[in-house]
Length: 254
View 1 (cartoon, helix red, strand yellow):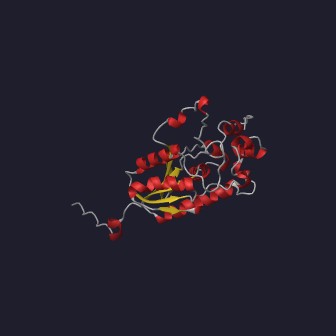
View 2: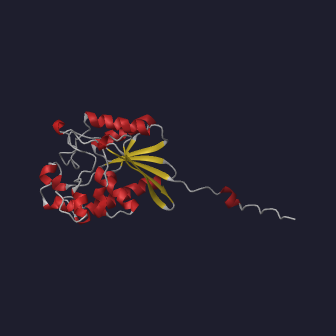
View 3: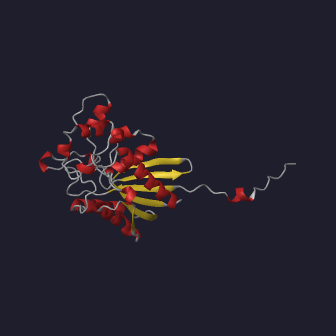
């Protein structure tokens, strides 16, 4: 005669899968300076008309998700992007200083073309882990700061979906950290304006779900040389091509 199956222990009967927290990192939309100028932490730089359209589009894409909270870098361009995301959910935006742009120090407000001619810019492309921006923070410090902010946000929202609006270089640093990519290779990651990068956090760590997702392929289209537009699908200090060439031992044009 077959013996009856043992009754599960009370804790087994009520055990549930551990909750996962989903973090959506949104880069702010473009400003009038995005591309030609390294804006840094200078205040008073809001979204351009195009940037507002990008932010609204990001908000529409995230409107169908049960977003529990929205956080933002305190800078205007991020706050405006975060507010467009929070509006469909009737949420307020929480300032999180840890999501700040990198402190570029004396580089803030300078033209990218001028910075490209410096030795330090070239070093940022190939060995960013060794770089400290003049009068600002190091790339390592920037990564450590935003990782701390991310972990605080995730810990506060177990099992929920949360959005954090930040900047290109910090978002790239987050992805590098959680995917095991050395910081010296983080320039190989691209983060477009108003794009969504998604990480899922659980007991075994974090998994990258989406990277640089805009819901379209528009950022792959080269800018029309006659229009004067610049390619913004990268990061504040990324020099596309130069980082790849130098990391492969070539003499890339930085």
